[in-house]
Length: 317
Image (cartoon, rainbow, N blue to C red; front, side, top):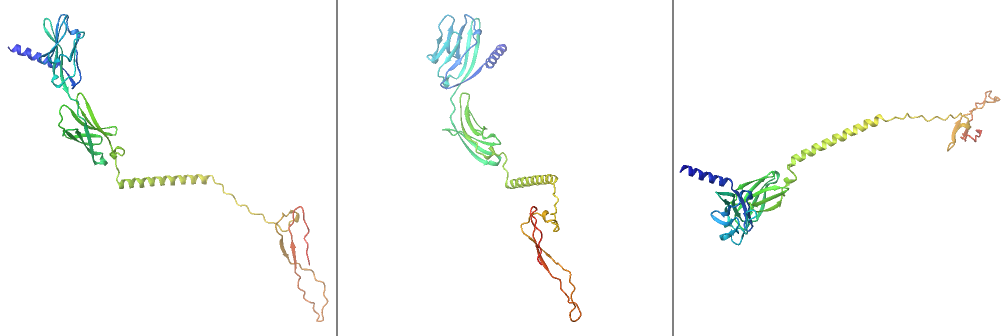
């Protein structure tokens, strides 16, 4: 008895281990296939869902579709696969392909789950602290009370309240400058997207007024030092290349030079000379003394002439 129970357990474990899960959207078609090389010639072949036959096929005969699958299931005897059209929730279950000859063998094992497409969602955001890029987002399933609240900080969002959704997932995340609310399951997805309007998108760190003023002063001082250094550098460079001109004395004109060597002047030059003539012997007057004669003053005008035209200086007595 114990040996029989052990064999049954091994058989169940092998069945679970070899089962492949297939998610199918409601209203779509389901394809189930097998490894054709695992079927021997002369084997009886069948597809079953749980304990209900879907199709039976014996070599040399026509396939037979059974029960509720008749009219919407198609069997391909070339490769032993089956297609079920327009699946519904009641079509969910465990599908197995069996081949029997000397013994029955499970050729394929599928666990089929039929799901509805997900419902659209609506996203709303509320900024808490723009400086830290901190905001909350609400992702709500349209036409239902199901929603989730998420807190987003520094490009990462986490759920504050776990949404009560069945067989689907609500998520909020930031991608390429947008906030995305995504609703998905294994067969479909939908989302709602809004642009990320928080200032932290372009300014990772928001500076206060004091910090901005300090940075402005530091920049102004640095620029001033740079300009002053450039001024001193160019000043030193200019001093090294400067040649100071020795002032030249204007030559003095010799008034006693020959008139022919004197350059033309725009106006005549007046020269005053005191000329004293020798006295003749005067006869004594009656008193016996000679009269006291004063020197005569002669005014003369001297004109400068051109080198080519020189005239003698005339004197008037």
